[in-house]
Image 1 (cartoon, rainbow over the protein chains, first blue to last red):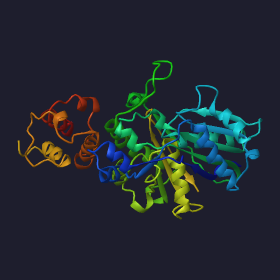
Image 2: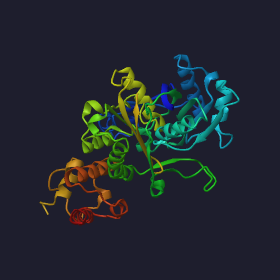
Image 3: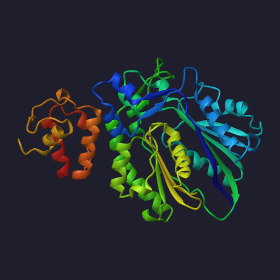
Image 4: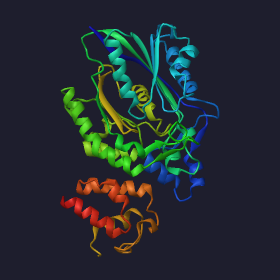
Length: 321
Length: 77
């Protein structure tokens, strides 16, 4: 039986750094300590001028290939999740195919999701692989939200960082369900609460990110506990059978509140955003990479992945590592 | 209204002296009442009372008294 499984992850962050000290100098009413303690973020990486999502995604994929898990010629499908594409058209995944040297016999498409994007990508990859449409799929998550962030918006400048991750999802001949069917959800009433209104067809102009932080916080505390419960039920597991929880790394304050509300032990709840901030759809693969590196995630472990945010959109699933 | 827990919570979150806020204090005029404090206030309501407010209604509150009334009606419903 063909089952999809995660074969490897790599990530890349751009070089320019924006520290809490720099932000605190610009916004004196927020101290360095205040920013660090509330967000859990010390610094974020910002793409250079002219450095786009495909540039970050390309470097993440090159690191994945260099790790030896696969080469560009092995890939037969590219899924690219981004909300800050290089162009309106063509599809950034098509540009990536040529830049990476992936065979022209490959499928390639972009999908526009934010913080839920990685889990949606896993679900799509599972569908493509387990129906025989692909065998070695490259899931790239890449964002340069900084290009939408206004210099005087301390909320979004503090939280978001740029980055990309490349994840190999491959076919395995096994009876094990490595990637469980995700639980999905959508509520477009939240669209206005995290939005770049201008710059596309409805409202031409300069694209600027607007975020209603308290509304998004309210959405997460209302929605995520039931999402976790539904995901456990769907996988017929109890909370204590999960070895590690990796949530979208939005900010530490929100994650700590959710962890306590769900009664997840601290040592099973992985956080990784101190030096990269909220990289949108890449936070989960970055955290998975770092959790494995730190010895917190080992082969055979059950890890619950929970993505939520812009849309509103959410998705969660259990992965056997 | 020295016993109003909503006012006392806002004072604590904004690091203001105890009993310094009254029911007619305008929220936007309270020093430190920014988006970060609003998030902390929402978290406090969830932890302490198990309630979440309708955010459009919350945005419609002008004074601390309006907010206290909204919290009270959410607790009763």
